[in-house]
Image (cartoon, rainbow, N blue to C red):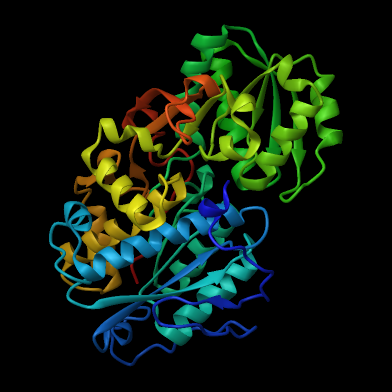
Length: 449
């Protein structure tokens, strides 16, 4: 991505060093402490201590260094725009959260940012400090599903609401779901169910797949969901599944095995910098001249990083792509507001971050209180919310947002109408039909207190 998209360059931060938000920076302790429980039997988590005074605090834990740093910086832009809009009572926020005036329940929202480094332990320590030291009423942020799952568990133990941002594993709202977490974005199951019919129709039946799979919960559940969907719909089989550690820089061994596998299609599940490097190296190996590249879980501006020529004709699933503004009025308004502040069209992570903040405000306003069980029950009513991708709602059974998946296909550079017009919109697939039964992945939410 360009320097403008990536924001300022990010130097290596010491573990748990916080970025500066509206409330200023703090340094986190190495040890993890839990907030003291008040004697008041109505006390839950950081409530009511966290609502004393004229403001409320939220903690943002997202990667600013490492393989997912670009996506983390993108999320931060969405969070900051949303909080700015909340505190000023901007029109876009009010379209999503109709009861909002300024702030949330009249209180100014302040925040701080921690670099999670996409590492679960680092994220948990940072979020724990937000809870114990700042009495955070909500924590948010993730690119790695391993981080999202770890923060799920922390949030449930501490009884503080957690809102993942990017998290593609089925487990986040499946076997690792918790009462205190709500996921906005699409995930392995919905990605596979949305893109499989498109690629089978385009490429035919009986194809052989080479998977490039990152070795953690996100990679394995996307691979499993894609393999199952493509076998069922198109009789596709797996020639090879190359599993690499998160943060791999040299994919040559894996790509040599892909090249020799006899596959027709390479399905690259890598994300962030790992995706960029593996795609560029696949091009150098000559793989992309003999195999079709498919990206079931993709951040669209990857085209800017690897080159439009490489992404031409590539089918990809994504959470948000700015050209949907022709169909959804709130997408158009979000794009306009984002461009006004940052100077370019928004990426997926920024939109997901904005929507998580806006929908949290809506749930709190409808509850009429910051008391966590009441806010959770407000979410669980399944109220339809107007969003940047149309009407959406949360399922009460697993706290997964029912939302569409967007399928795109890379454009030839000669067909691009602007510098960031990388894709043709293939289909916007309704989310409800893509989702498994709520209990299928083992979700058991647990208690409110």
